[in-house]
Length: 319
Image (cartoon, rainbow, N blue to C red; front, side, top):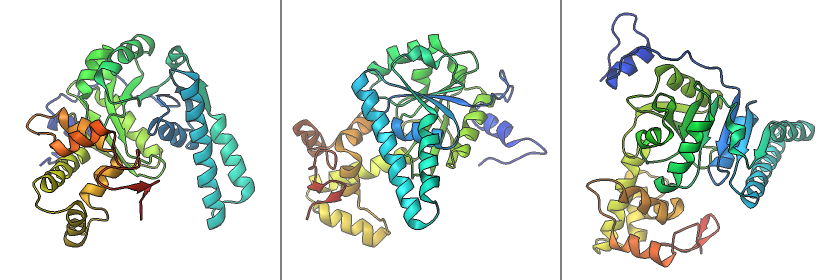
């Protein structure tokens, strides 16, 4: 439990709680230009919400096809949300069109990571693979300024390890958004023992400026949400594997008995069985259930592939 003493600021209290001095090496930078690396499921949403809130965004991809598909995702999402606002009467058609034009006008697509040099904040949102991230972070570290905040959207990988890769540990932190970024309110803002306090607070303020509800946490496996959620999903799969109950009965039990809107087996399918497997396989003290491993090997990944523990029709369970 953290207790305030005298007039100590919340930032000082938090710094003490994680075993770091509250002394600052940086003054908090103003964030106006944001780089996003990777325009996939999460990256395009991060780029979109930043642009919608008035930030200039440099959207970087490795190949033209990924860049084009990512920009198309942003366009489609902004149009869809604008149409819903018009239907609800919260925005006129002309306002929706102006919002679309303004948002897309703030996004600069690029294949050149050198364009990140002038960014105040760079958010990495590529595949959850440390072997892939290592050369990327080495390049980021060589590109950005000494005042740039470097953030990863990872849901479970070590922020400290990525700080080691980029060679800028004071500037490295986590900004873990949730899917879909456009709608989900939570952002986990994650610091290591070396993260500069002022840069951390600036990143926290950025998340708030996006209209999100950020929380502060330290670098640990799974942070807060996944540290609690993923073991729960794994135990549910293990129950099914041991023959305790069927997937549908496990899900029904948790919906009716615990008030959960979605059961754990369905949720694992919805998230992606490969994602769940990849997260838990990197943690000490946990085993990947054989049935989970088998489905991933078979390509039955859940919602994204059309079949996992259940069959799917788009984002809904098949009839």
